Length: 305
Image 1 (tube, one colour):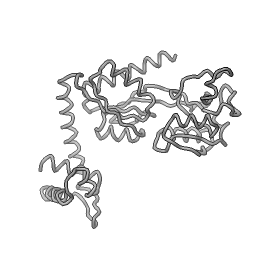
Image 2 (cartoon, helix red, strand yellow):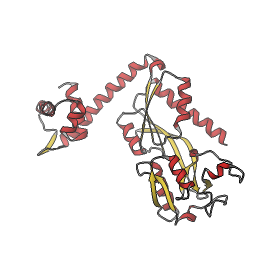
Image 3 (cartoon, helix red, strand yellow):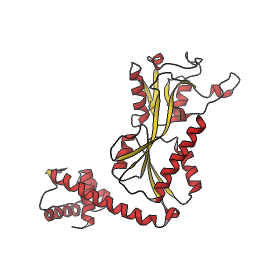
Image 4 (cartoon, helix red, strand yellow):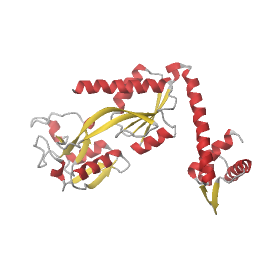
C-alpha cells in the first residue's frame, strides 16, 4: 500500500465512477481498476459494491475513507507548517466566500500590506463553503449566515440591514420605510437558487406571511438592480450592495438607480461571518488574513455607528 494507491482510492470514492475518476487522474480506466483491486486484496475486504458498471462505496470503504482523508489532511498540515518557515513572503491562503461584493476592498487592503501572499478565492453557497472548509480544501470561509458547527470557529464580521429596492416610479418609492408585507403581491427579482441571497429572500418573505413570486433570476447583482430600475419587479438587497445615491429631483442618478427603502420588520437583517476549523493548522498567511479581516470589519462597524 502506498500514497498513490490511497490518492486513487480517495478520488474513486468521491466520484463513485471509475471512468470519471480515471479522467480526473489522467490514467487509463483498466490501470485504475487494477490499482483499486490490488488495494482491496491487500486490505482483505471489498471497498466498493459493484453492480455492472456502477460502483458504490460500501461500509468498509466508508470506514477506510475516513482514515485516508485523515492521512492526507495530516500531510497537508505538515506542508503548511513547513511553508510557514518562509514567513509571509511566500504564503498562500485558500478562502471560500458566499458573498462577493464585500471582498474587493478587503482583499486589496490586505494585499497592499502583504503583496507576496497569494490568495486563492473560491465562491459558492454557505453550504458549499462549509463543505470546502470541513474537507480542508480552504483555510477560511466568509458566509452568511454564520456556520454553526462544533468543529468550526465562527465570528461575526458584520450585521447588515436588508433593503427593498423598487423602481423610481413605484407606489412605495416616496415612503421613508416599508414593511415587507406591503409587497406581498409584487414580482420579485433575485439571484439564482445557487446563491444564499435567494434563500434569505424566501425566508424573509415567509416570515412576512407570503411566498415571493420570483419571476426573474440571474447571477449578476448589477443586472438585478437594472431590472428593478426598469420596472420589472422589486428585490431584497443587502446594505453593502449599494451606496446611498442622491435621489433628489435634480439628480440624474434618480433615473439610473432604484429607490432603496429600509424595512421595518425585525427580521430584516443578516449576519456575515468568518469561519475556520478549530483543530486544523492555519499557516502564518492564513492567520494574518483571518486577523486582518476581523480588524477590517471592526473598523467598518465603528465608522457606521
